[in-house]
Image 1 (cartoon, rainbow, N blue to C red):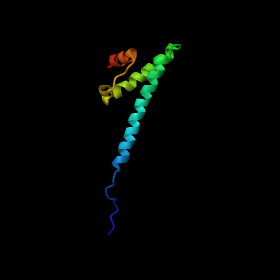
Image 2 (cartoon, one colour):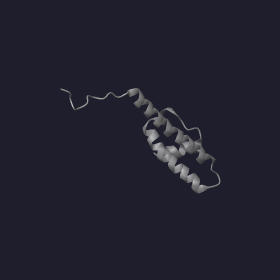
Image 3 (cartoon, one colour):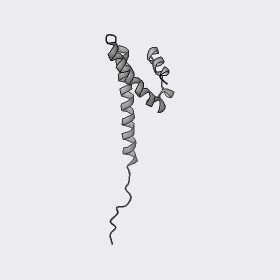
Image 4 (tube, helix red, strand yellow):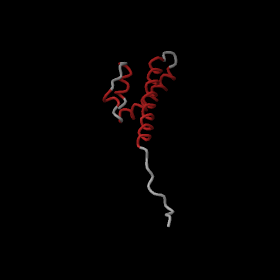
Length: 86
């Protein structure tokens, strides 16, 4: 007799790991782009603050993931801002 319940499904762990790596890379790319925009924005204070707010929101998660344990932000003002946001 054939079972109506399917057997256990196999998970392709290589594909899952690749998807997780791409998602993490996306967060780092967004952080870097926001940092560049925040540093470069001289004309519009409101826009610069918006970039900084988003940057700091992402910094919390990237810090929890350990990014700042292995990498350092070179721009002194940005480094201090991220360090103060703990």
